[in-house]
Every structure is written in structure tokens, then in C-alpha cells.
Image 1 (cartoon, helix red, strand yellow):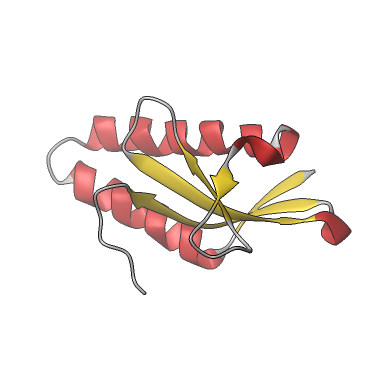
Image 2 (image 1 turned 135 degrees about the vertical axis):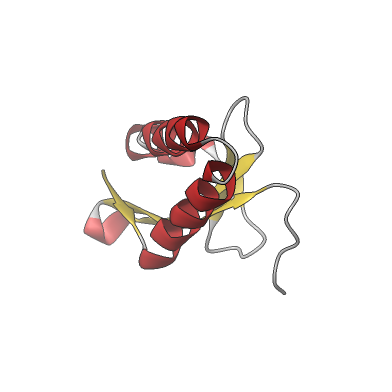
Length: 94
């Protein structure tokens, strides 16, 4: 399967970078690179997450990090679409 990042997920990653970069730009770059690299596993193992709050989504907690990747599997498009990336402590919208 191919891995696709929705526009919202890219905005989320930019926000994560900007938040961390205020104190440490080097760490911010490393965190975002790790999130991208870790998400690449979803293309090979799309079922490694658990069913999300919305039954159409899956959630995968990135190992050794506080971040959650929220994604959808589109079998017809042979794609995993990353819809959002968020900090686990962040309050979610209803």
C-alpha cells in the first residue's frame, strides 16, 4: 500500500515542529523526521493500529513517543491515508 498524508496531517506535523522548535529546532526536526519514518510502517502493516474513536479510522501510538497517528485504510485505492497526528495528552474534538 502507499502512504498518503492528508493536508490536515501535514498541518499537524508543522505545528508539532513549530512548538518544539521554539526551544530546540534540532529536536523538532528529529521528532518530525521520526514521525514520518515511523508512519511509513503503516504502508506495510496497516492493521498495526487499533480501531479509532471513529470506527472508520485507526490509531497508532508511535513507539517511545507521546504522538498518535490517526489514519484510514482505503483498500480500493491501495492506500493508507494519515488523517491527523496529535500529542496523546491533547484534548480531542468531539
